[in-house]
Image 1 (cartoon, helix red, strand yellow):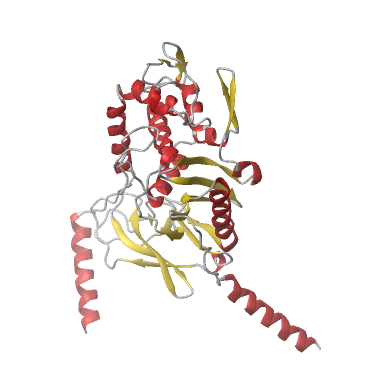
Image 2 (tube, one colour):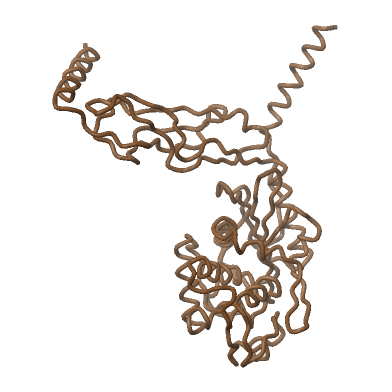
Length: 387
């Protein structure tokens, strides 16, 4: 009986081990384009037509918020700055007819903080124009700022013509580019990102609710933005955190509010169910101390220039192996950051990631006598290897 139990336990353990690495096919959505990304590692878990250029509608306001967040972080504007609303930014501007508004009025002063709430929560097209004019002097100049930031973020297939996303020829983006932008908002601007989780905002006596209703149904979702025009269809960029893992999803071109919400829920549930983020090593962590020839000291510490984090099938994190490969005959002088080897992350025989190991300290050249002595030793060692 004990042997039978042991056999059953062994078979069960083997089955669980294999099941941990089995991932079913990703959900197939009716959206025109979509993507699911691990915000921590940048790993794309699911994608479909992710590089197809599409009109972003109000998802444009993610970049408007990003530019404003950059300006706030740099101290070039503050939340208390007052903006006088122009007639161009007036909620009654015919350009805005039938669209989402914050309901600001010309000639009145509104703070940058109020406008930011109006952009993110109320999705106010009038608020975006007021911010654009305040930060850049004109909408056209602000669009130039948006495009410069898009280029810096690697959003290669995006071009902005305005700050709000109302239809304009050539005003296009992709699911992949929006995921990069969402990742940047999460990681680079923690001081303003919480604004995307706000459920409602009241201005001028008008209470408006965040259109990202998925936040009301899934407590792990804390942003980001919805968008809609008849040209673009219904879109949603969302982010959620479960068990220390943050995912970003982008769904574009669905046919209804419920479709964009259910598609987003399906992507997020799939990612959290079948994947996990693993933080292996931190930047600056000492990984090895190889010998140094001709140096003032006999060893040098080497490690990573950046953190190593990976996205792997759930349950596979414990199976990751690391292999360190160091250069032969490391010689002084050495400066901090010199590449002296490689670290490989391996899962079941497959190399998942390969990153350089760099010097964490400077090593000066040794005395002339030590350099000469080490040169002779290196020569003898090479002759011995040849022999």
